[in-house]
Image 1 (cartoon, helix red, strand yellow):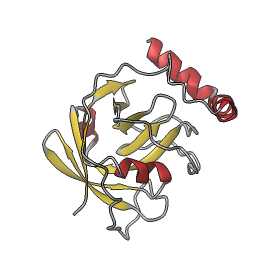
Image 2: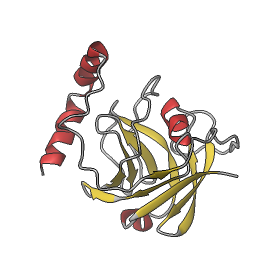
Image 3: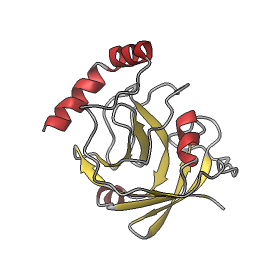
Length: 179
């Protein structure tokens, strides 16, 4: 319950928090950090996947980057958008994360480090299948239900084409650069 309340308060005060953080120029990841229970594995940073798809997704920012995603051993189609945060995530690939449920709408996990939020695109409300990054906590979220309204703290990184049922029960996700 405390995490839910903190996340709601954080989303409500997003603009003020971001302005304060930008002014202070600090990297304080104190009390609002979620407990780390995920397991992350990463190899040396790989280059950003170069293959691009011409078909837009619900999370299209400009040119999507194809990625390979495996959820609990089942391969699903997925793309990352061309935002700076998505490109930063691509440098961490391959990445395997253990997921846990959050708020009955998303599965979350902690990547090995925080992603850039520089030049973030306009906020948009997350949709089922969206892979997102919640900047204040530094966690990835995979939505299995449409999320709340748009927030500048929640960056949509891409989209995973899988049924909500598969996404809602996901325990482990592996994200790799497309060959």
